[in-house]
Length: 334
Ligand code: KG4
Ligand code: ZN
Image: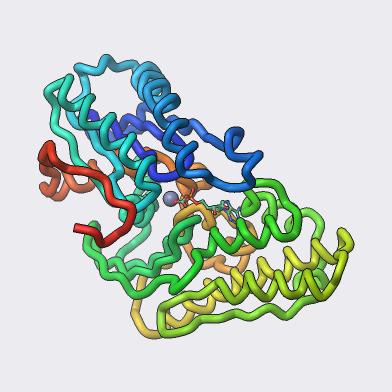
């Protein structure tokens, strides 16, 4: 089966084409909107929707061209319909529906977090061996920080999540506070990795707040960094580096601690970490036992959505969505 997948949940227009015959990824396109968001220092939902309107048809065209397929050769269209920025998701879902209608092909909708969750299965496409179940899985991105127990392929239970900000949001907001350009998460990682010493990482003692079993909280950390900046008056560049390094340490420690706690409670074969923050080098360093997909498959992409559709097909659970299907900003709306 040849599946074309679309993800427009945030500020990247993503299209991928997967051939499930040999689990071969025929194309994997990511059109980033970073350039349009830079001057605002963050994602502006209205602009993201408008950028998707421009970029998605081009990404779809490019995806088919690289896959060397005509639209008629596709068997199935899959699209992310939740959770995410509602306007952005609506562009993706409407495009998927229009494509499916024009081609008389079925389409299905998928949950973005579930796609991140099973992105470690991407090794199937790379002819590696997938991590052994059961997994303890942390999905850690700009909008989500969720811990799951994955019993088997597509069989999982939610253990906990953030009660306020997501870890990626904490990276982005704290990075901005210390003067880094958008997107501040990867910039903070790189700056700290290249320049910080052990003294920078421990200079400020920020809270590692894990409120309840299997849950996370990062808003107190953001406030603590902001208060520390005020207390310093005019922080020097060295202070700013220490603020960034100490805050990174606090975020990473909070994530690692919740994984350690859950590992004690549940007998798991593998720990997997996915989502944009899974690119963080300090997190990777502090969790040497965990499996991390490669960077381009940790951040948003449509390959993981195509793969999820393929995995549903493999388990005979892929069914066409009705035409009235729409998009939802949150996980749990109907
Ligand atoms: O999964 P993703 O691409 O989009 C969402 O679904 O949110 O994650 C994006 C998030 C952003 O908050 C970004 O700053 C963060 O992942 N991120 C990082 C790194 N790379 C991306 N955070 C820390 N270190 C990184 N290297
Ligand atoms: Zn994501």
